[in-house]
Image (cartoon, rainbow, N blue to C red; front, side, top):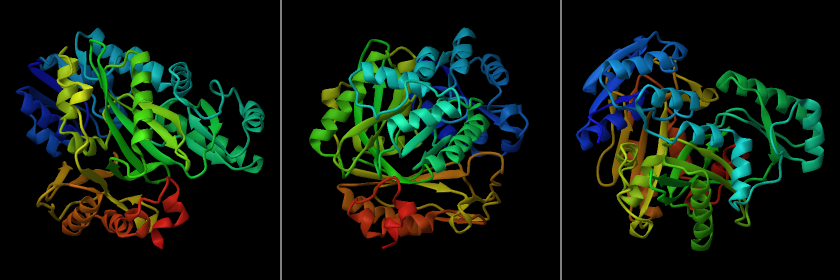
Length: 448
């Protein structure tokens, strides 16, 4: 086991990794920007190192400073969390070249599965269903026109690199294609520095369902069942749950088998997620792979009893998986609400500011992952998520009731959050009956 691990991230995921390190008896080293000097992760870690100014490019995206901090503090490994450099193959490669372990998959695997076109080719080779689309990125808009005619409208344009719902646009007709192409390319360049796009058939009102997998250095790969992530706005998830009320035992068997087959084909190790789009007839299609821990990993932890972050660290240290597929079972139901400092009444605009006071919910089956504290000034430079509220129940009905209770007890005074909006969704008939899809917010399904 490692003696000391550097956490190349901030916010609640940094706090979460610090907690896992403490459970394993590992010394944690936080990094922070000048804007995060008073951040919780910088205060509770065993050690903390400033790595640059507020701008992410100068701090949390600065590979040289992060690796230098790890070496200077005597770390043996770096955990990237999610976002920032977590899916950057160059960072993973430079980490290992510096003699440090990267707590995640290899740089080659990140590069392979991070490019959506290459990931799709591997999915096909593994026998995983994929939607009709281009074999690789389109060269230019003229090729996009030709491919859209071949595939048939509606089509989805997606960034070849990156994830997190960025660089995605849908064109329902030729008239919409130019705006969709330009919008997706511009967003892809802004977020990933890569404007390449590929195209696939757009599945009307699909569910977004993903499978959590874990692999070790010895060829063992297991799945930890599925998560339902269809409650989202503009490709940004708001509420996740596990298991999915839409997934039948037969569909679960097919989807999880497909995910494991794909992970084995690419020699995957550590934590990863295979994402699928599922149509109304329960046909599923490979979407992408996230080669990191997911924001919504706690719901999987709740229903399986597996600490995914601890498992990540142990696998990176060379230990085999501590359980087999046969030892994993689904128990109960879990729901997560992402708590963002943003205003739904103003188009979900970010609302940085000072937390004048706060009250976190408690009681049976309630968990809050957060880096917030009273008096904390939320900086305007980073993602607006300030916490994740997770509840567990014996079944979905109990989990819904507990989430309503927990949301009602949650208070962040001084900033606007989306908790009232999430309560609106949790109280809707569409959510109660699990009759929703990725477009339900835009379609107003939760308003009736």
